[in-house]
Amino acid sequence: MDTRTNPARARIARLREVMHQRGISAVLVPSSDPHLSEYLPGRWQGREHFSGFTGSMGTLVVKDDTAALFADSRYWTQAEAQLKDSGIELVRIPTGTSLLHLEWLARQVPRGGMVAVDGDVLGLAASQQLRNALAPAGITLQTHGDVLEAAWDERPALPQARVYEHAAPHAPLPRAAKLAQVREAMRAHGATHHFVSTVDDIAWITNLRGADVEYNPVFLAHLLVAPDQATLFVGAGKIDPALQARLAADGIALADYAGAAAALAALPASSVLLVDPRRITLGFREQVAPGVRVVEAINPSTLAKSRKSPEEIAFVREAMAQDGAAMCAFYAWFEQAIRPERPFGPVSEITIDEKLSGERRKRPGFAGLSFPVIAGWNANGAMPHYRASPESHAVIEGDGLLLIDSGAQYLGGTTDITRVWPIGTITRQHRQDYTRVLQGTLALSQARFPRGTLSPMLDALARAPLWEAKLDYGHGTGHGVGYFLNVHEGPQSISKAMTEPAMAMEAGMITSIEPGLYRPGQWGIRIENLVVNQPAGSTEFGDFLEFETLTLCPIDTRAIEPGMLSPRDVSWLNAYHAVVRERLLPLVEGEARAWLLARTEPFAG
Image (cartoon, rainbow, N blue to C red):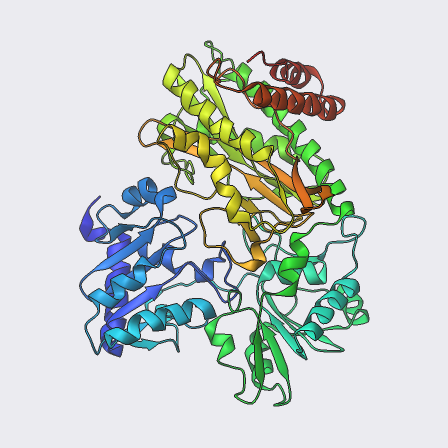
């Protein structure tokens, strides 16, 4: 690439002009928006626009003479390629929650300098961490104003997708009942008002869905809950009159999306406002009048929506069956397509994306994908968040391992599954790596633990078989999953993250189990199922939980190294495949049925 015409270089240069005009020493560009979302509408994809790095997480810092992108191991290979010739340094951080960029700023910015970041996209908790890092170094923090706006030509506008209702029977609990739950929690905190900005919380509370954020059925809005009324701040025209009337009947009034800050500023001095410091931006917190007492605690809806009801879990089981049937149809086609004679022509990672997504679209209740399909052949599979493109993708030929991570949104649930398939002749090293990852998946899947166990405490169960061989992986083991909502949701996280009380495991929580192993330049392995916490009985030591595996798709046994699985693991795997066969056989026919029968044959060990 000609560095003189690299788009990132030109954009960074324009940003530096604005910085120079305003006396700014450094600009911090987080991967964030006013709702602190993981997946961002185009208007707030500033980090991607100015750096060229398209990963879903990362932090960009631009100084007058240097620029750095901070990313964890899931993105290192991708970032190296996308940052080439951009003039931006890749700083490798251990985890996505690392604060290394704060230390970098404190070292790199001179005393008396100024760091600018848009307070409207900076989390309240993150802003305190930033101040604590910069103040001792004598660095000023500027959070008013969006520096990117002046340097970003043709910045995308706000999305305009319509909002629709997630109705019964798939929404078993009416929004009036959900508002009552939220108000009960408000009273417990002594709060008269509660401000919510996280879009999945708002979608859950209101039983509304949208399409403002790719792959997540949510819409941009803020919600202010008062004792007898709630105000939904949403774009004009996004909610039709009939739905507006139904919302009004449930005590929800509409207001302009841009009016949320003014509504906070207008709260009476006698108000007590409940906000979640991890789920509200500094900009909104600063709008609250000094006389209003603020209570900081986790959003009540974040806890409530993580605990799926029995009715919701029943719908999730149905969605998993439809998803599994779609995968059977795809994999049956795929195994035919990669025969030596290539009856359908070359098969690439792009083909896999198209065909698998096409099979899902045929299933009842399908509403969209839950994230971009990750189809990684051999070395591409070693990049956990790899995504093939028309410009850069691999053709499936030769020998090796194919990793496919995919998922969908259904009216009755959200799916996320990863499988690895051996193609041609694989080596003993392939099989050993695959089996160790499978051991981790099975070890955690069979766990039983006290109710209230902090989810990060379970992380080591999946890593232990890999640690035994001095192996590890750089991402978390499991994330919460929404109910026809975001594929990543909290508060639980099976990871190395620091624990907090909200991460306590409770019945009804749906979480992924997805240990992995990645050998850069060679292959990647990840085996992922979704599980739900179910009661496992009580003893004198308390109430216990166990996992019910929800995902329904065969786990390929051809890549298992003989003799490595324990009898307990073999028994679990065979029992799982018996369930997969029983649940999916009524939904498949022809080649898909034959494929399912073959791939669920008992494994001898």
